[in-house]
Length: 289
Image (cartoon, rainbow, N blue to C red; front, side, top):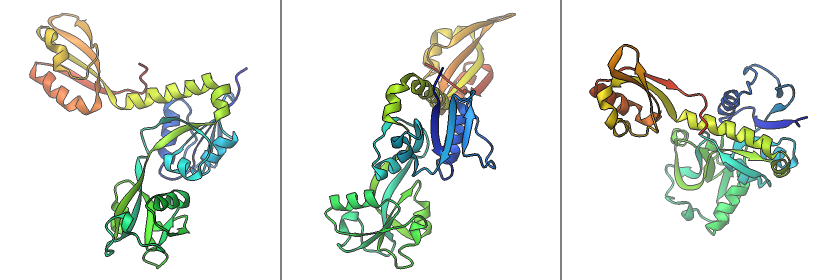
């Protein structure tokens, strides 16, 4: 009898929807967004999805409440929980940065004066960052709206997550230092990693196949038979295209191939130049190499 495999994913925030989409992609369809369900069960109880706050997931994993979890690298380092990082995912990329008001004369975090107050939702990482710079600062812990802290006189400096920097600019703040490059990661309970190794590998392989497929496209086209000797060079990124005869056509063949998503437009242009027709580009749900 197979034991339960429980996976914790964020119930809200920037990582929630991508995590739900990922679970759907590997065959664990989540309830709709209006559902109040906190635990979803799949495959006759073999799998459970636990919806939790992203910042609680590292602790849940360390405690063994869940075997696997999806959360941000920033939260793992902030909490300091003893968990195993299994793999990086393809979403949630951002930076934890230090920022000051636009009118400030500070151009680098190393110029922050001793005694300055820093507002942040990441007190541990912020403390370590400024200690490394040799600065003695006061930490003002906040749980949201960090960007307004300088405006209301709560802090001189903030540290916060940013993806594009647009929110900082909107609040008239300027980046003066990058503390951490973060990304969503899959983490595991260390005991589960030993006792449920095969089950965890099954999930990891499924996720890996989805991530790999997201960067590829399936290409189908009819091309002149005379172009076959040069087909590999004409289609960069293609690994072993499948060649098939077309009934009733001696001059044309059908090709099927997997291509890199970022090369699709160039490949289409090349195929049209050599007389390719019936070109189809399709997404790939899963790809196991």
